[in-house]
Every structure is written in C-alpha cells, then in structure tokens.
Length: 333
Image 1 (cartoon, rainbow, N blue to C red):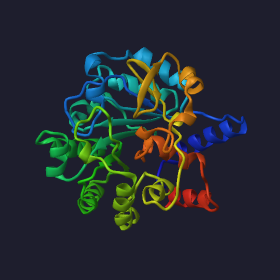
Image 2 (spheres, rainbow, N blue to C red):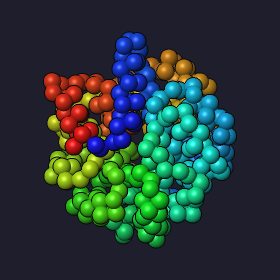
Image 3 (cartoon, rainbow, N blue to C red):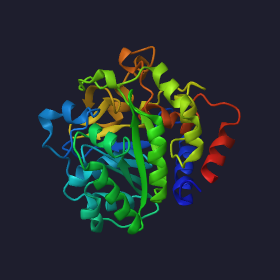
C-alpha cells in the first residue's frame, strides 16, 4: 500500500462523514507554522521575507494544540520556518499524534540526526524532507553548501530509527527534470517511502521572479516528465499530476488547507496574505472565496501548487468517471 491502512481509512472516514453532513467547506490539511525562523535563506521561500518583522516570535505549544483542535483537520503539516528548531518540537508532535492526526513534519533535514531521540516512530508520522535537486542544485537553491549532504544524513538517520520518510520537491523554471529523475532514484535506494512534488509559486516577497513558471510552462515541464511519475512512488495523487500536465482542470480548494501562524489564521490561503483572522471560523466564513483563483485574482493566475489543488483531487472536485477507481488503484499499488 502507498500509505498505512489506518491512516487511509481514518482520512476516508473523515471525508465521508463531512459529505454525509452536507458540509460545503471543511479542512483537510492544517498548515501549522509555529515559527518562521529558519537556519537557511532559500531563494524561492517567501516566509522568511514576508514575516521578517516577526521572525523571532513563536506560537506556544498550547496555542498550536488549540489550532489543531479548533480546525479539526485530519492531517497536520508542521512547517515554518524550520520547525526542527522550535523548542519542544518533539512534545508538540507527540501531542498532535495523541489526537489521532496524521503529521507531516516539514524540514530541511539538517537537525534530524541531532534530535531524533525527541520522536518516536508512528504509522501516522512522516519526516517530510526538502530536496530541490541533487547536491549542487539543491545547495544553490538553499544558498548554502553542504545542506544536501546533511539532509541525506538526516534521511538515513530517520530510516535507521524506523521512521516513515517522504520528501518534497519544488519545481522552478530552471529545474532539470532529468536531474529530479536521478534524485528520486537515489532517494529510492535509501528506502524513502514516497515523494511529493509541486511547481513553485511566485511570492510577492521573492525578488527572483524569473525563477517561477507560467501555467503553460508548468504543463510543458510536467508533461515531459510523465515517465518519471510512473517510475517512482509518488505521494502526489495521479489526479493532481494530471492537472499539472494539463490533462484536466481542477478548481482551487484553498479553504481545505488553512494556515495558522503567529499572526492568526492566514487569509485567504497558504500563499496569499490579505488578512490574518482571529479564528478558523472567521477564515472560512468571512473570506469571499469566489474572488480568488485563476480568472478571479491575478495573483492566482499561475498557481498550481499542491496547497490549492491536491485536496481538490482528494475531495472529488471536478471529478470524472473512473477517478475513484484510479485513486483506489493508486493507494494499493
């Protein structure tokens, strides 16, 4: 199976319950940002620039847990910033797991070996390690030499200790998809459990705009790599990958991926900041969702990121005949 059965059945049950209750908008993945501080200055990252004035502030563990409870999403992605430098990250992770959530800890991987004793393996817990290419390309992207090797060492430490490990890769204009093929082959040899991939988003806070792609660029690049997606164990769904290849359209479901950070509930989405709401309810109910998305807001025009569209696949938005069977086969193969 692609994912542990307990994890899959729990998420499927959650979706079924929400649909039976006729809920129109409900969360799938909470993007929890307990801090925005990071030990790196990745070229394509908007967080450390957008929140430069509050970079030293942190949510408390209690505030993080309150957000998990308030939101109720079955999956929590702990991100940032670099969450491995958050004081009490092991305790926070354990307490979220106690709530029967699936947890992805998004990290650059540099502190895994040092802090591995703060965590315990669990079928609902993944170290999600960032790789944007092989050694030279990745180190250029994160603006520091040696990061690739440190991240690989972190992956090895996690696998040796019995943890589930996946990786996330952002594709930019100059990304060589053949190099990514090499990367995923190498990571497969290290027993990495699965791979997530997404095109970059042109953050207003990032100066290097030429690194980002148009929608046409994204489709061309992902179509050219179609064989690679059949070759390795991707956690990105086949429906989302079809969307990236231009084989189908998906509507944005940013409301299913709410973000909670030190300023509140980020509105409207993980990528665009127009306001920070005091409550999750305000984010859902007071956001004019129809004003956003391609064709409605120019900032959304070239966005095809997982945070807006992967949940569309999971929720059956713009579904086609055969999609359910396709998703079931993908899970069990």
